[in-house]
Image (cartoon, rainbow, N blue to C red; front, side):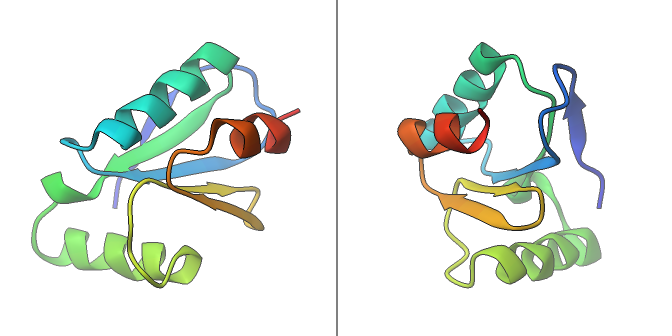
Length: 92
């Protein structure tokens, strides 16, 4: 499973599980880029076969409901859905 990396300030280890067609996922990416933080993301809907299953298993650890977007921060904080206030607060 290969995440795409976006360069920026390394404030935390940030993983974004997203769908390529999801408007809220796009807004989450835009907010992260506006904040200038480095993060890794993966579009689960563009994966196939074993790679997709691996991504879903990893996502299930963070968010058992498998909803998008799911943002995992420092392997502890999880923000499900687009929540600008929570994202900004977690990355201060």
